Image (cartoon, rainbow, N blue to C red; front, top):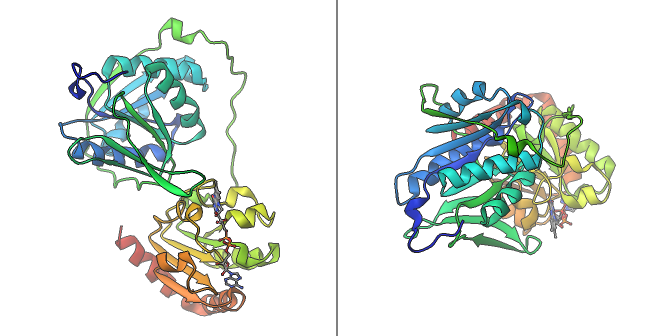
Length: 356
Ligand SMILES: Cc1cc2nc3c(=O)[nH]c(=O)nc-3n(C[C@H](O)[C@H](O)[C@H](O)COP(=O)(O)OP(=O)(O)OC[C@H]3O[C@@H](n4cnc5c(N)ncnc54)[C@H](O)[C@@H]3O)c2cc1C
């Protein structure tokens, strides 16, 4: 929708978060985005509300929780036609509601669903979309949404504005923002909307929907991540990384160089083209810290880097930088941990938690 001078930004109001609701569950990125939306709405020039839009079947149960995570209004579209995910149906419903309520900002998780729906909505309502943002803010003076993301293969960090169209739309990866501490007393207004018959007509028919069950530790949820880079030198080196992760009850991460070398699977990759993580403790072993890697882990609470090059970029970002050969340092740490200094690591984790 074009923002004309005669139809100034007053026509468009509120910050919307498109909730991810699948298989009866709310994806954690929704809560993270609600917290971010609250910060954005507080900075907007005019008073605006945080509105959570949720589509699916049985969405009513989720609505109350959104109020605990900063939502002022929840718009629910509860319909059996939304039980299985069909991006064209979802996009038609969302774009109609966007045209009806005219939000100033609309954000969603850069999940596979968000990535599928948001470009369709952007086209249907004729506005822009900044995908995979690593930061969102409001520009002082103009009140425009500042959408930050890596560009040109991660060589620059670009800040993108959408000046003439509304809503300003972005997708954001899980882990970029922290979910706020829930306020169980939070309440708000619920608006119920429907799916129109015409919107149910689609050329795509979903035959079956199944959810993958990741048996390993989910990187995005891990409190401690031990990551290996090219310096680990091979799959054998990753056994040592895995051992350290196990002692610390953490997860194993990897740089793209390690993944591309075939030493570990892609599901472990941290960075621009991997996962975005924000653990309490991130231990980078033999990782140089190129921008594409840092993009995925720089929000970690406490960073420890082990590298033989004191000048590696990761060493400047690290809270503790250990200069040395990881093949000497890591076994020593494992030995110390096994012989009973876990208490110190627990203390470190608590310190990191208290800095939240
Ligand atoms: C479009 C694009 C997307 C990308 N996405 C990602 C991404 O998602 N994630 C990602 O990680 N990268 C990504 N990259 C790649 C990124 O640019 C780097 O190439 C990569 O992160 C380097 O991995 P590394 O730090 O393991 O290897 P290197 O840069 O080679 O660093 C290895 C480090 O190990 C140290 N070292 C070597 N031996 C030892 C030892 N014995 N003891 C201690 N230290 C040692 C070295 O001093 C060096 O600092 C992307 C690149 C592009 C262009």
